[in-house]
Length: 187
Image 1 (cartoon, rainbow, N blue to C red):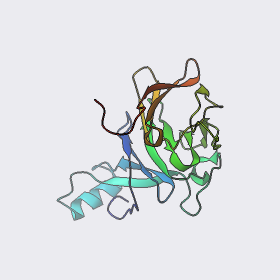
Image 2 (image 1 turned 135 degrees about the vertical axis):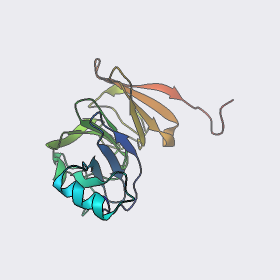
Image 3 (image 1 turned 180 degrees about the horizontal axis):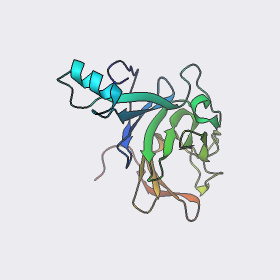
Image 4 (image 1 turned 30 degrees about the vertical axis):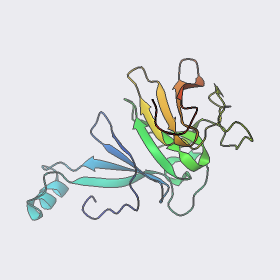
């Protein structure tokens, strides 16, 4: 429950069209969901009555990942393994796209059913650390941030390589959108 839920390192969050909040915890290798507990529910009446200063209370559940061991395992969402999930974005169908930073991939969690690799190989190429290609063959250099535009295109930030990448579902390619060649502040 929200009042008792504990996070080790909540990193990023996104809000769904259903007002659920999804939060990544890269230390625990999990993605958690906060769902509002309605005031008029049996559980809500008790919580809000006993805690009059609370405006909203949330039920907190682990949607994907296992805090026991990091890894890269595509399987049922709750037992799937992540290694440092940082960025998260949710589409209108409640599909979660996650920047699985240390696995160097983008993962997809479809509802609470399955977690799978959406883009990237997770392999470490010698050079360059990033490769634009088909979604399944692309290489990411520790993706961190992730966002989605109204057309469903996914943007990924890779601070280590100073790049912003794009996954266009229609093509399905991963391509560079912007990059910084030299270190330091932009002009």
